[in-house]
Length: 335
Image (cartoon, rainbow, N blue to C red; front, side, top):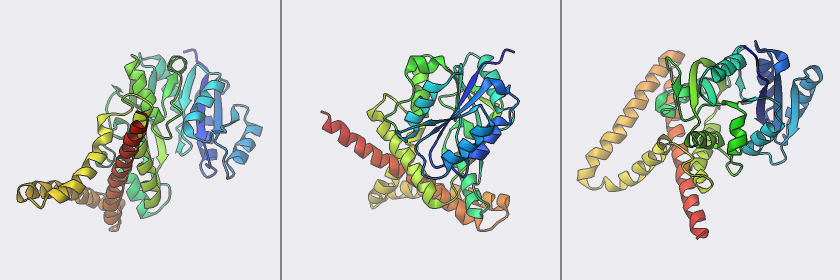
């Protein structure tokens, strides 16, 4: 196999705690070192991120630091792609660590398939050694928590999908589709991948590719992150056509059902139906929380898991509702 040049792009801002471990895991690779460049696109970090990267650059020629004056992730990705010398673009996340064969497997699967983007599974890990952090990681790796995203589930064989996390792309795709939408603060990868599919490109998920992702470890960060994700799922409609899949609207639909269903439940005909749906939701959450408590071997994990499910679903739903209202307001202004 002739190894193509791979440009690994890491958009980062204030990632002092994670960036060194991330880069070291990418450098500890079975892929030929001379065929790799690691581009850290720094969004004007206010912590020690730049210093950490600069120290690593002194000993490793493959590591490069690029400034992102716009600070946000989507411009950072495009800046990295613009500076990339490789024929293969691999997007990496600063909160993740990567196995030794990660780059090699991505490139092999990309070149040996008809896909223009490939990716793998996410193994969600707790960011700290607390019961709460472990419960949040459990929730973020369960289909009841995150929906039908296949890269969070166990699949037996490669499948064509609508998106992958931290994709490995043929660079030509970015030349033809003009990169990530810089108007988007979140979900720019989902929007780009769906745009790929609409233009006839294929995305494939491979179960033999696995990365470790370190989840938020407290409820505030979990809420804020998923509220923003839900908000930008809706707001992305302002800048792109069909920028998300139907499954992304489920939390919003559930939240609307909870609020308006409670109002309608004063009518006896609807009350039983409303109560049965809410009861089923709570029952599933309790059942999975009991399983989590046994798995984690802490009784308090039951409460943390149950609450994490609620925080995850309600924050995403609330963000989507706010995003939909803002979207409607912006569209009315443009008339």
